[in-house]
Length: 346
Image (cartoon, rainbow, N blue to C red):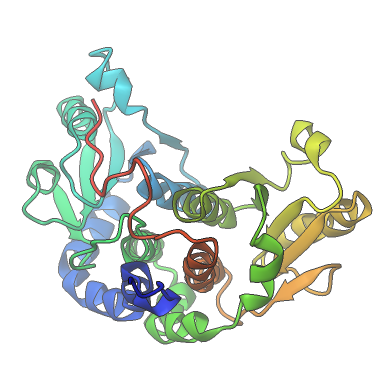
């Protein structure tokens, strides 16, 4: 007779709990390459930044896009790998910086797009967990994620490592002293975020069939990651929206009992997210919130930190909740049906 799975038994639980140590190790491992790249980018600024990623890595790229555009005032766009791998075409990459983000560094479509961008004049920086991968070898600069082996299909520590690496690069490039000092405390903050109790959100999500995750600014990429993890590990539909977009068509299907997770950070976007809480509550939605203050519904505990780091702390607390929710719904978060750890698309 098999022993029932508990949340603490999963690889997802163990690997997410390693994130603080990963971030501390990464800061040291990347230091020389990151500093050299930041200096080069200040001396010869790119005309634009292009991100290249899929899955959780693309969610990390969304975080980077907001930070590059708000901190460095540089236009940033996400590359479509199929433009190169399927259509054998490429935009004009001359004078751009491409940030390629990947756990494996081996997906054929990413390699094709990265190679074409580099041939077209882009400076290629690869943030990759496997330093022996073809993507790492192709790059002008390799910034190792230093996450170590990640065996659960649900990426956790590698996502946090990707976001942390992107924030660190942007902070050094921008010479943002306050953010760099805050990053020194990130491993300890992630430890504390992992220990926060988000279990109040578990009972109302046990039988959920849908979930909206709503945020704005750099928190939007975190919302995308949370929605992806709900689909992967818990087996029900979840979708991420910007607080500015959800008021349009998506609001039409919100009815009594529809769960909504609202995320905020202490920046200019917070009030616009908080303002949605009474609107959702008035429609009978089940409002769950983190980081937006005193609003209707279930309020989850959060930590005070630099606003750029707050969304990353939210996802660390969320991973523990998602893992527990998956197990409570009778699923193994490490082995979702029909999914593999490395997906090689063309």
